[in-house]
Image (tube, rainbow, N blue to C red; front, side, top):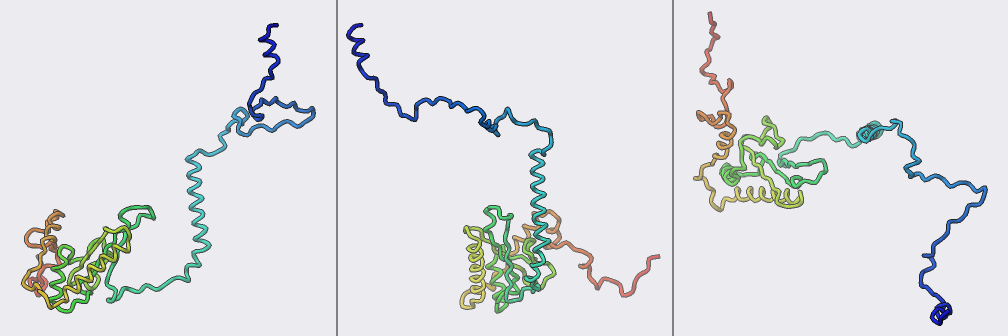
Length: 251
């Protein structure tokens, strides 16, 4: 044995591996010990599918039915408690002529939910004189209409429409209350300016209804012909003085 081999044998071999990285030998089970439980997620031990469960679409339908039954149980059990909160309907008075319209998409986020629209009959506004009414309609411009807007919630047979309606909407601000406040402030400024007799009353300026004529023309229903002004004639427009005093029998 040479000297190099003797030096190698004499040296002590050391290593820096951690004890936890030492390879562990599998422990032997003692005879008579209970066997380990089978792995529940082992694919080899899964039982065969016997078509006894519903599909994904079936579970979705069952979930919808459970939700409907949940609300039906709430209606049956708690709807009677809401009778204590019933209030008799009181139509709005002349002190509250504003009609506010909002848009909702069932609590879904949408930019149009912040929009607020205010509709009010001109006859219910605190306008002092006919000159103030004339000036107010001039200030309203294309926002004035002789009939209530279709989406205003005001019926055509309701009172207060003899001087027309004004519609103001706003959706420039992120919050609904801010848009409603802006529309309400604009309406207050218009009323204050119309009642201000110190300035020019614009009595020599005629009312401009070209926006109404353009609207009728775009509908393409013939309402702009023969000077009908957007209203198609009917039997109610037939002059009563043209009718005979006695019924005429046709032989």
